[in-house]
Length: 193
Ligand code: HEM
Image 1 (cartoon, protein in one colour):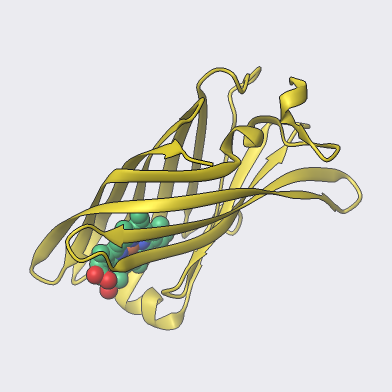
Image 2 (cartoon, rainbow, N blue to C red):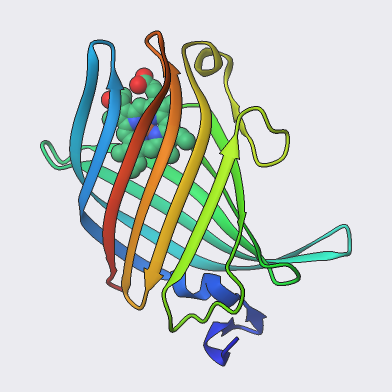
């Protein structure tokens, strides 16, 4: 890892590439409706901040980046998705974890492994997944959501190269009598600060 990944004495490794303020206005959301689906062009800002490190059970040390994502519908400029979370990196085995919650009563702990020898000057690909049937990389949700709008699985691929970021995420939903509806969001962002 280069010295660019060290901030205030903490090595953020690949997560250093995320830190900053990112804007993107090419978002497309595909979301469920009772009679089909809707497609929503959107713009958003995601702010990633260095948040130190933590030690678990005196054995595992994780670097932590905190984020806040605010997504607005292009058609009316209203915020229609808000998400707060963390990205974690374990240098011991290159595990990455994304944990986040959305204000519908749903929380996700998704994980994956970063390709070895990732260099922040190159393209970095963060790929994580969670499944509601798993007690580890899983999903928990409030009773209403569990019964009426259940998130069964989540996958997220986020790619960063320099000041460009793009992502694709799929939230699988059981809703309106449909099984495994692919609620999908994609966008491309630029670092603006
Ligand atoms: C850019 C990201 C996202 C956008 C723009 C977005 C937008 C939407 C929209 C427009 C709906 C349709 C219902 C409504 O109009 O309120 C919806 C439903 C839903 N979303 Fe998302 N979403 C995003 C990401 C996520 C993520 C990451 C999750 C969870 C892991 C999630 C979980 C849900 C659930 C459970 C519903 C069903 C609730 C309902 O339709 O009544 N969404 N989302």
